[in-house]
Image: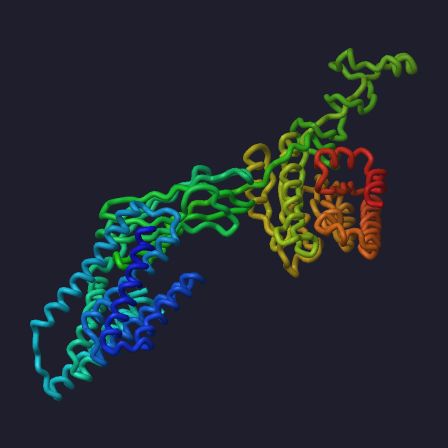
Length: 168
Length: 432
């Protein structure tokens, strides 16, 4: 459990740090840099009062800040790192809450280890694919972009419906 | 909002924004989210194929005795990365030791066992329902199932049985078998019953020489009272309006313990005993002898609950015909003023009636704080209530009904013995 707590703290710091660095190098404006304090505060309050749903809000804020950051042209690597770390934070926090519900966990260290392995794999693949995007260059016209948007809208709507039905 | 919904909604937003702005870096932000959800879909659990066994180390225990429960769940399907198993515990049971839930990984053919001991209040419990939830390693997708045994396992937690010794009763009619109850019939026995003329075959030791001296020429023999077994009908009052309770039915539980003790005593003496639970509904345990009947009565008492039924609000609906004519009835009830008439009617139907009455006033008084008890209004109220109860007892005794007032902090054995010997003196002293 200590390892898990450490990983959660690390994920939080990396998410906030990456965004702060990205915003700092973009503008140097302290007001924007300190916007990353908001999700940390929300997460901290939730942890203090044991409201685990606040992690969802913190995660959403991190992702939205990263999105805004990319839209205003901060360093994309910072934003991607922030999103990956925020995702890790969300996942590990939920995993920790689940573990706390049980007095008996068979092979706990192995279970935690495998969870870390799966999450680490996703984070590494994300960075790898992000690296690969530098090698890919697709030029889209207005109509092809519109077509792609319609297909994505339909596909994602179906995906979200499926997720709502199947997930927790 | 669930985690996967939030992630998928944000993914939706990022992708649409990226496409709308034709911005590649924004689309790149969606990569971790796509991979995260994709891993969930890819490694999500298959439909659950689980079986389980549920074992109790004892199907019948006395109240206060712990029961060990063993649950074994076996996976017959594909590998379950994370599975959470929870056994359903009855509300009135407390887990003393062990675990009722476990989180584990289960390979195909692998089993996981839960072992725990629990302490349950008096009652009848059914086991055999289990909740299982399997998720992928990241917990994004889940499959939930409630497993139920075809034949659920049952547990009786019976009330403790206190020993009260032999209770002296004298019903109007006894059964043919030898026992301990005076049968009002002359024959072989211990207690002197009368004198009759000598008949060939009478033992010379039983000849009454004093009577022979008074009547020369005739021979007289002492006759003894036969002792036989009798029919005893126990009636436990479970009417809500009669039973004082403080949330956990304490006075009713005392009544149940008294009934168990009386049943045990009568059965040990060889009598045929039946039980009628009168309250929410009528629960009738047929008359019987011996250990088997004792067990049936204890199981019936284990299930007994206080009830609030309009039909059984008064004792007038006691089905007296269930009890053999002229048998001994024992009512265990705190008693209400309107019960007198019905009990008189039962007495007039040739039943010998005894009432063991757990004292509701003493019980209610014990629940009060010292300040409440000391107040003048409370003292007056208690005095009035006791007078009413004394009057009720007097009316019953005038009808030939034996009444025992039982303050539940006193041993039942002692109270019954004293109540049978000097009932009037005791109640006057105890109530006033």
